[in-house]
Length: 98
Image (cartoon, rainbow, N blue to C red; front, top):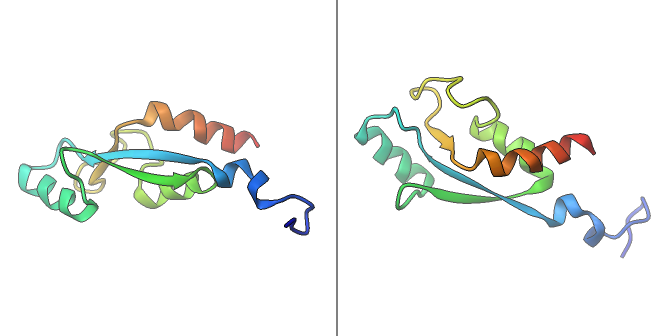
């Protein structure tokens, strides 16, 4: 089935592909704070991955507060960190270029 633009949804590579955001509690949190954040985000074993459609990557990063450079906000404002920023950055760059 094609949409009004003449392409099928399966041909939308940005929508059909996913990026994993590997997050962990901010390292500057106290152990008690880190445990609370781990519970809030379902983090077990120190980190967890959130599967995000590539088309929504920018919005997911922004919503989680991970759209700024590491260390831009103190731990009391930014409770989680992105552990795989080097892997996510190219996916975000290609999204911005298109």
